[in-house]
Length: 448
Image (cartoon, rainbow, N blue to C red):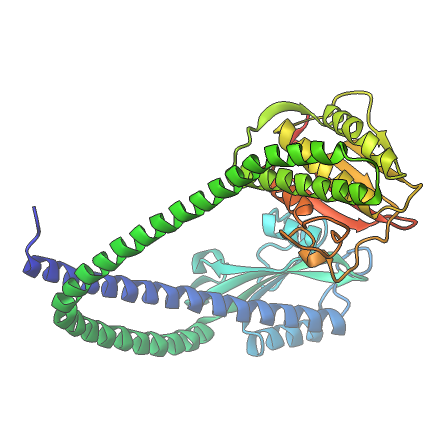
């Protein structure tokens, strides 16, 4: 059941008016809150300045926190200064034992005064100010309309030795601040009302045109959604094509390798064998990329990084020897388990080891380490290291900055994608003593 256009228009106008009233109420409450906030800040500044001046000119508390006293003409001068300059109607000096040593009204002198604000000032040397109830100030009928109560520590050598409790008359200050905010609120209210009037007129005039535009926008959204679905289908087809093409290339590459192996030994045969090996490796990497992009991995609890490293090193050990390099594994004598996909982790580690074997010098050892706390796989070589200019793009697909010795630039990208799927982090840095070190680190919460 559709709502008549006129009713929708009236409803929208009512919403605008309601929002305007809420904005005016919020502005009024905000102006009141700001008035109190600014007044308290001003009072706190006066209280701190007065305390600093009094503590600097007089010895009110000695170094042990004992009240020395304010007597005679000195007392009268202090109280006149307090009333006329700092607008302080009552002043109490409280020692570290929480006993009132001086009260300008004489009301609490000698009494123990337990208040959380006094404890805070003595413990943390923090000044506090809040509005006080005139009936609780002890000033009787002479109490001002607006009074703030401040607790300011008296410091000696950086430590509080006492506290001043000050009652400040902020009636005039609050009135001045309130008048400023009243002007600001009046301006704000006028602007809001004017904006509301303009908004109502514009909304009333444009609703019908907007309805027509909405129909057109809906048509555009439908077209954009169809284009998005078509793009997703095209991307899926491209991924499937990549995976299928790489899969179909496996068999002819195997046949080609068998025929080349059957040829008499020669430099040409060795070169062809290397080319076929590179092509086979590229095909496997393309398949790995397709699987990772399609998220065809299954994360399960209990994948043992030690077993993953042991199996991968065992498979690549003959390749390391044939290239004149050694391959060593250092791992704990207990399982290091993470949540992950064993096949994807083996493929990532194989790419890191393959990268190290290509860049490490002949006769050197590529070291594979399994760390337990936190769980990580680490591969280190004695090659030229990773240049600083290359590192920002090191794990991007087809980056050839360090993968230029026969690789396609997919190995480290596969490692990065595998890390992302496992909520892990892969990083490369310089190995102490020369070389590069790659580390695949897993979150602490995923191992046990």
